[in-house]
Length: 279
Length: 294
Image: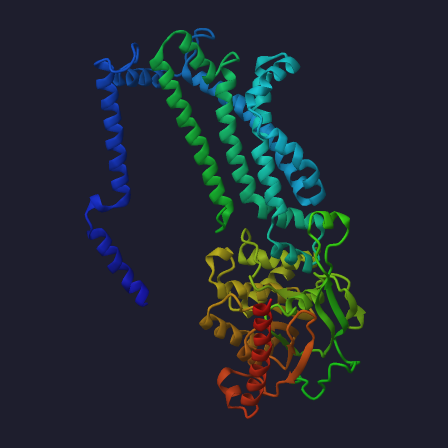
C-alpha cells in the first residue's frame, strides 16, 4: 500500500520538472538543432561555393526528394524508372535471396549446433566463407548462372547466409544446460527436446542472426545492382552517368530509410521472442 | 499417515530391506586427461575423485537433507540419483532396481528454477505432464495442472511468463512442475539458494506445508542448518572433498507438523544445531586451509 501511495507523488514531481529537462525532449532538441545547422551549412556552403562545382544546395535536393517520393511509380524504360519501382525491384531480389538463405541457414544451423562433431567439422567452411566480400562472388555468379537477375539473388543468398548460420549454430550449441536437464529428467525424446526446448531456447540467437543477415542483404543489393540492370543500386549508377547529384542523394537517403525500417522490424521480432532474456 | 520413520532409521552401513532408495558404495570419479595428444598440448589432468564409497538407505516417505561444505560433491550425488550423471562404481537402487538414467519416477527441483522462459507457468507444467504421459486426456491433464498450481499457491498466475514472477514464485513453479509428474522421489538441489532470506524462510514453511500433504520421499541439498532442521527427518552430513564421504547421519525427532517457533522449543534442538554447526565449521575451515596452503 505504501508503494501505491508513494507512486503518484513521484509521478507528480516528475511532471513538475520543466519540459526542457526531460531527456527525450532534450535529445530531440539536440537532433533538430544539429540537423538545422547541417542544412544551413550545406545551403550556405553550396551557394557561396565552398565546395567543388556542381554540389547541389539543400533546398534543391529537398525539392528533388519531394518530387521523387510524390511520383514514385512511372515507367519510361529502364533508364527512367520511378524510385518506387526501383525500390520494389530491389526489395523483391532481397526477399527471394534472403528467404532462401534463411531457409537453408536455420535448419542447417540447428543440425550443426546439436552435434559437437558436426560443429567442429563444418566450422572451418563457415569461417572461411564468412569473410569473403559478397562482390567477389559476382563474376562467378555471372559465369555460372549467365543471368544478371539470378546472379543478384545468388549474391544475396550467399552473403546473407553466414550470420544466420553462425548465430543459429551458436544458439543451439549453447542452450542452458538446466533446460536440457529438465527435459532429460522428464524422459523427453530427442525430437521433443529439439522442438520444444532447444529451438525455442535458441530463438533469440536465431532472430538476431536473421537481423544481421537482413542488414547485410540490404547492404549488398545496392552494390550488386550497380553492376546489374535495375533496382536502387542501378538507379544510383544511372544518375551518376547523368551527373545528377541531387538524385543520388535522394536515393542514398531512401536506401538508409528502408534499411532502418527493415532493421526495426527485426528489433521488434527480437523483443517478441526474448521473454525477459537479454541477448 | 505415518510419522517420520525415526525409529527405523538405520546406520549407513546396514542394508535395509524396506528402503525405497539404496545408495551402495557409490563413487564418482571425473576422469582426467591423459594420452600423448594431451601431453603434447600440456593439458594432462589427474583423475578427480569427487565422492567415495557413499552408502545410504532411504526409507519411503522420509525427508532427507544432505548438508556439507561447498564443493563436497552433494550435487554430484544428487545428479547421480537423478540419472543425469553416470555412476563410476557402486549402484543406486530405486525399489530394488538399479538406476541407469533419468526417469519420471524422480522429480527434480533446480537451484536456478530452470523454468522455460518462453512458456507460461501453465505451459511449463503442461510440458512436464505431457512429456511423461503423451497420451494423457486433456481433461485429466488440466485437472492435474490446476491441482498442483493450487497446491503451491499459484492459482491466478497460470498465464504469466517466468520473467514476470519473483524468485520465490518461480521456485513454486519449479516445485509444482516436479510434483505434477507424480514422482516417487523428489530431488531438490539447493532449492532456496538463490532466494533472499525472507522469501527463503517463507518458502521453507510452504515446503513443510506441502510435504505434510504429499509425504513424498524427498532428498534435498542445502547449506542452511535451520532449513535442514525445519524440514528433514534425517540429516546426512558429508565431509569435504575430494573423495567426500558421509560423516554422520542425524535423526531429527521433532513432531510434525512443524514450524520455526515450535521446533526451537524442542529440547533436542540446541544440541542438534550445535552438532551440525561444529561439523560444518570444522569442514569449512579445513577446506579454506587447504585452499590457502595450495
